[in-house]
Image 1 (cartoon, one colour):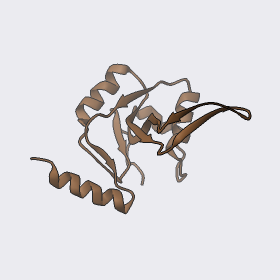
Image 2: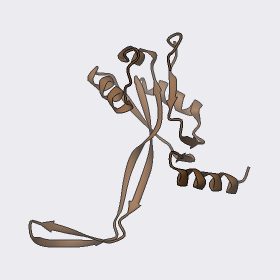
Image 3: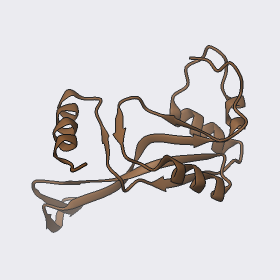
Length: 141
């Protein structure tokens, strides 16, 4: 993909395998208010370990935490950029998003984080696609 002309306003980039109800105007407003060169959307993700997790110090048991829940913020695959970020890209060269974000930071530019609380699902795997279809059918209009 190539751009015919460089945008003169902030723009959104989004992974193509997502379904979301994020308010994009709110996201753009947040990006502008923060004055960052980039904004990365994040989503809280948690999982429960189905076992007791042993805490050890060398060969000694310190304790066992039964079925702990771990919570993280994960990259939601939605970004907002200022037009000058495009100057970091090289023509006809693939660049993964983490590399671009590193370049933005290396330039001393700011990256803000926007937590998504609205519906969001990655449908890159067939099972997640099926789940999304069920969730969308179940939601009232």
